[in-house]
Length: 367
Image (cartoon, rainbow, N blue to C red; front, side, top):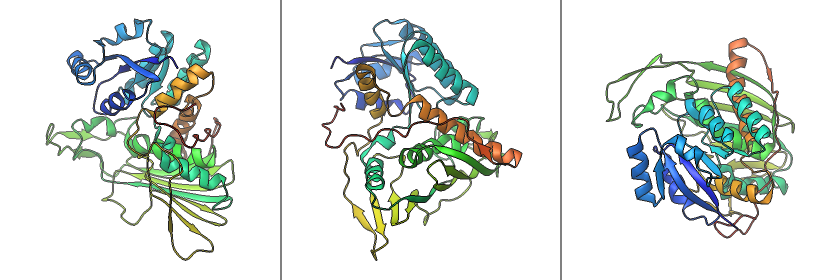
């Protein structure tokens, strides 16, 4: 397959995994990178053997580039995506798709107008861990799913992240930061969400940075930092989720569990690609660790880009598609809206459950 030429916009902390992994995929060629800090783009180009470091405008104007990977901060996601689509490029963006629903809708509308694909992180659900869970559910190991729980409990990022301010700005918080991993995994396993309710709070109106770069700086918190919600899935399952930056961990809580009529499935951390996957059937006394049925179990960030490259060449929909990302974006806002307005929120969007990954893949080859 002729490689899809890719340009990366944003050479910050997360970009390293993309540069490294995409270099190992023959279906993708990273042809250029850019950043507001041109020195940082040049350093990334040199480190990862990228032919060209340039401005965002130059990258978007390059006719050789087919796909733009948008790794900017969330507040810039929509603007860069829309510029890329307007320039005739497919676009893959880090999570979340956008900050607001209106921005997300504008991205999907522009992509449809231009007949281009949109993809969005997370792509962790394409890894061997969650794909094994999907297969176990589809093969009936736990029977019809009845309910699910999901927990992301922590203290926030100001104690380790060098630039943690955006986690506490509008469009940040635990739901918008980590919710995409959990909600995308749940939709991949159980299908789309029909109705949501939730409660939110902001426990600490100020945070003090204790990481080295900005030690002692105070952050004004602009978004809820503890979000609890309930989801009614179209499939009939009921999900419960808590995401928090306000607690000192939840050592006894699972990341995700799926409860079926015949058993329970313990799902691995949705921020990873591997296992373990644990199963407890109704007729078993103990939990059993299940062998992983799919590959890509290491840190495979960029797998969604590889799948998108095959989708572009093959004329199919990509698995980590814009419709899935928008459904998750709407759901994240729905928890906040339901809390603010004291009501259930009926989801306006839906999406197809992503197609399962094939088994027995050779690394770097999907179709």
